[in-house]
Length: 339
Length: 148
Image (tube, rainbow over all chains, first blue to last red; front, top):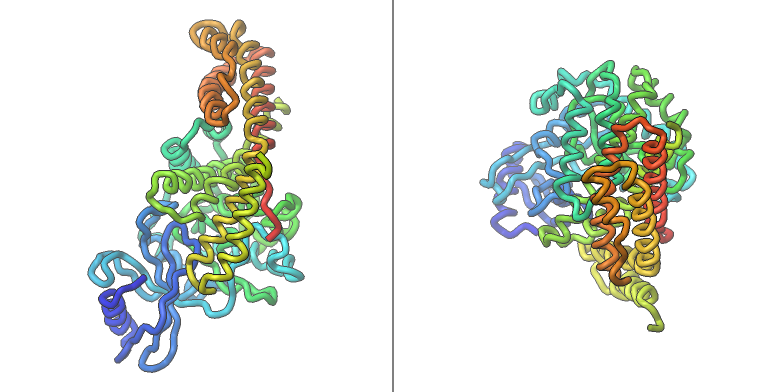
């Protein structure tokens, strides 16, 4: 995972960042998943005191093409706020330290992610987690975007919806291994029915779902992770993605499989200070399935092309792809029936 | 063949999820890889059992839409719809059925795009019916995750 030269380079770099006399790496472990960036747990002794870090490193072929500057500055944007994020320590954009770009952040020692497909993942704390999950999403959107570190590296879009649709529709076109009549129909509908302009441009996490949240098993959320796709845009984008049926663990009456949609929206409104727009949401929830499909078919292509042999990409191109197509086809068929 | 392909895949998944994982270091990356590979086997076991049936039905349903649409749409597209509507699956190998399905899906995209520009009742009805075919196909393709 890290050879001797890389370890030595990282130890020296961390010593400089932390102002420490000595840094010794005692263990390195790679975490499973991390489709856009490889994630390592780094155990160290800083001047003799144990301390854990997370290193995020670019993989050979990423599921999602993202900018590590964006991810690093997104974490920095919420340091010291009500949004629980690990402290971001350093960003290295060249190959001089370990031979490839990476960044280092705090390792959250309490909490683990729940499987996004396990309905019993939170046990008796499901609704408590659900309330916190949507309140924290509101807090993300309450933060002033223009003054955030993220604003320095993420441009303010002129048309949020068009930028997002163009990007993800292109991903579907570029990476699909077979014709996508369902997705093509949805993209035509999205272009013909653009959403209203957002009342407020906010930071958008862009992968806000239960699988990217750490919880302590006692009903507490300890960290919001995986900000690699963060950008400025319409907050309904996050809300729609978080409520996509793929994450509902087979219970469409519960947002993210946790609490009722009405309660989730109410908590989000309360924490964000924003007003839910059902017309905008309808557009963004249709868009969310295109984004999902874009991610899943890209994963499938990377696996089939041999660029990344990780079986998580094989799975991503299978079950989630079928789920996205099913969701889109049901919605489009219902729309056509209503005409 | 007894046991069939689905049963063999389930057996592979059981071996991976049981004996193989048990033999791996608990915190190794390979544990996650092995769990994922077992899960893919479980999903493929469902897929192989129904794939041919679903593709045969869907290809026939799309061809029926094309045959209805051909005289109404007319022109070059109508001619190609008539031709595609008259085709049959050369055999029932899944690779053959999928290749045929891909060709039909490509033409279906063209047909739906054309139908959306028209206001006649027949166009709306064909469009609606074509989405029913896609919805039924997507529902039929859906696989079930095993309990966590």
